[in-house]
Length: 404
Image (cartoon, rainbow, N blue to C red; front, side, top):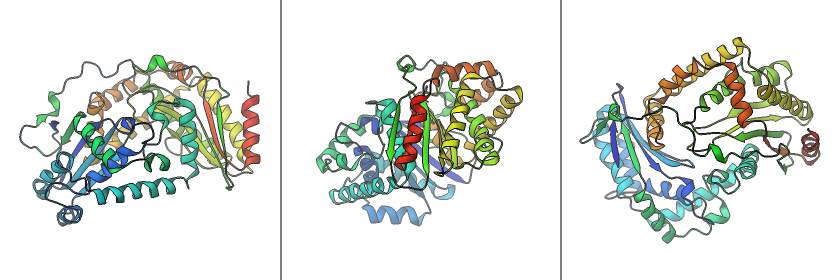
């Protein structure tokens, strides 16, 4: 494991570990095995069973959290500065010497199954799941990081032990604002470029604009998601996409809010999803509408998509999008935990941890023409996923099929 220290004054100390390889390490027919593994890691380590471990952290008011991504696993601990020396050694034991008890494995397996069942109650999850499978096919990004119940039923205790052997070999990076012996200063890390060409960029396929997936469900709303796979954070185009995201979805001045809520009152929810990913990140617009308003909402959405792929942003729109994006970057690093989690993930993905500062500088120089060129590069042939009552889904489907 590589250990790094960042100078950041705070009454809260945080240590975060990024483990390269997340749900993309799940084997066929065992999707969800890494989700179960990280849950199991937090249920006991050398010298502490699950009860003792929980009591120990609670006695110091410390928190430990974990999250799985397609590209890696993030585990972090935080406590007030006064007690961090007491909880930090246990944090290392959790990663390096977990108990991996069989009875706790069964509990983690059941908890994961229950979570997946509950997640299916949210129609947005189903729509996004269908969209991912449509766009990414057999790529790791096509699958839910939590796995699938049929696969989880195939996972046994021996599989978990074998997966942990794989886990031990993966590259790990720890970053903390608490200095410990042999930690390197984060400033010692040198990256030659802030942005590189995405190695997966050449694999972005030019798909038919009529690609769609329909899911019938008897609910009193229609969920619509439209988008394409784009590029990684390391790609020069990513900054242009973030400006476009800011223009579309940041705040009450955003284009989505003004079209769908302020002027027409057509949606319950609307936004853009464009996360940090190692390879071709998704760029999607999602919204939910009542059955009575769904056709009008969808037509407005198609017009908006045509606009962002065919028309330049005005100078006022571009300037406002830049201001909001700069504010969002600053806000995302507001707490010690946010700052360290963000930077350790960047390091784990082999991206300069100072990239956000450089991104702000880059944003100021971007012109509307560059934003449009990037939109045309990635977004001209989107894929569509919808969920709702059959009659309304079929109406949406027909409009999509008839679209030239």
